[in-house]
Image (cartoon, rainbow, N blue to C red; front, side, top):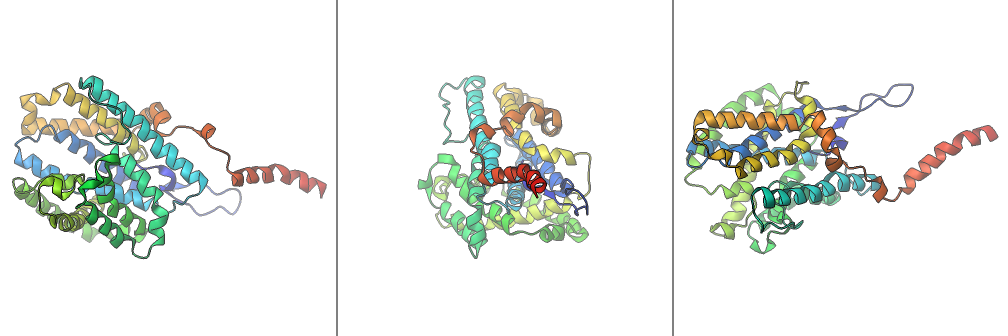
Length: 372
């Protein structure tokens, strides 16, 4: 789901010849694939949960950690981002351009598939899942600032807490989500590889079992008592009709509980190469494309069948969503949609003076050697 520039670790250099190609870390590819499966499955539950307290409880538990897990990994792989021209170009072509294309495509899809003539194309008002691209663009663009300040995580938490009590932020660019999810990205920036190794120990895998069991019990208990909008991080506390002081408190509470479940999720992610490891490189494709399937099924009324509201029907829809998003992460699908997700836009950018100098040096070096 994230640009792959930093998803690799270098191999030792060979004593002769150029350094070998970088090798991707299987753990992070596995984590991204499993997280995108959870995202797709949770989206398929939204039209089904209705009055089902069990499904609603499981839904809230999954929602409490699947996006934080994505965002933490995104922050971790943004640690090397700076304002170097090649990285800015990649940010534009890998995040900003896909946002423009998919926000336009989703708006047109809703207008015509859902027969909604009032659905306008507005790049300032992300619809459904495109908000994440806006957030990733802003977070990554501000990465040099977070690397500069002394206490980045407390500062990010403070910003999220203030955002939760500031309804005047409005809906433009889904800034409530951008700011309230910001601490997870900043946490990823400050994490080191050894922190991920710590949560992958056998003791953590064992401890994750009772933690998730307790989370499911709390989720079931909280269904009639808690507003699920807290898990979306898209509204100020005043818009949810709660006292203002609950906003900062819930930001901290949600941050703590989400990180606990995220750590448990990482503990269960295999570190070795699996049959689905290669699909981790295509999670952005699965993320952006599966929304058409989920929303299209909803527009067509497929979720209205009564048998889908029963446990077997819910399991069937979950399996179908998992299979669909898996297919969308495969190489053939990536080749078809690469024009939108990874467009070649060299024509739109000036040549970097440093790159030009390097090319000139390579081309003139043999002549200088001959002259010598």
